[in-house]
Length: 86
Image (tube, rainbow, N blue to C red; front, side, top):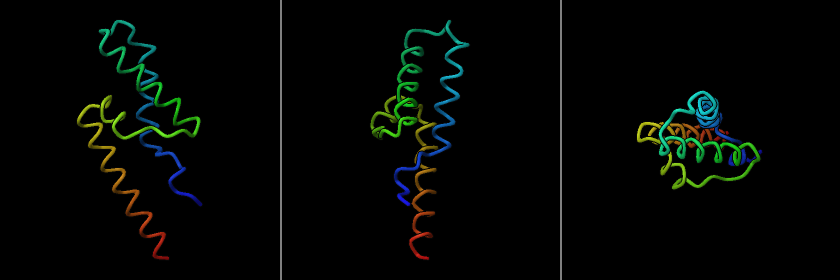
């Protein structure tokens, strides 16, 4: 099984929550509306099995959100190492 093609479920959940909030937060500033639109676009790409570049994610996620992506990526690497060792 190709682990790289499996979407990161936590990242998808984060992006999905941002998309759901967009519908409720139409009173946001143009900057925040733009950010949410970009995140929604990335979510759609991920749902269609397309790749999203790290630099694009880093641009549109907050520092804390980006740090969380890095933590989850490290967890994925550890899981992959364990699977390869079997």
